[in-house]
Length: 157
Image (cartoon, rainbow, N blue to C red; front, side):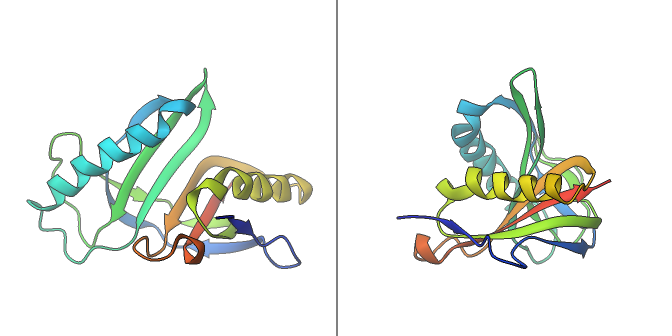
């Protein structure tokens, strides 16, 4: 299965997004630890959400900051409707609001590195200054991997 990132005119764009409340768990991980860390943190988030009254749930996401010393600041989570008190490693957080560079990946998650490369290269070509906060919002994950849509955002400074 192949993931595709639209690279034609208009594929990458600047959009304005509103801040969104989230329930998240945070970790500093090596690149090779990302998949297993994401799965472990998502299990903790899912368990905590069963006890929290956070209203209707929105999409899942992963927020990240550029690697430092070979480690990525990773924050997987889910959009929630209201604030809550921390439960174990699951803490209230938020996706930032503001202007972002944006692109949509159509296809499975193995296309994410290429999609991020496309978006960040486009930003460099447009002389856009990045704030160092990036995130991806996952579409419906229950269907065909070829039909999945993941929305990538890089916050602009």
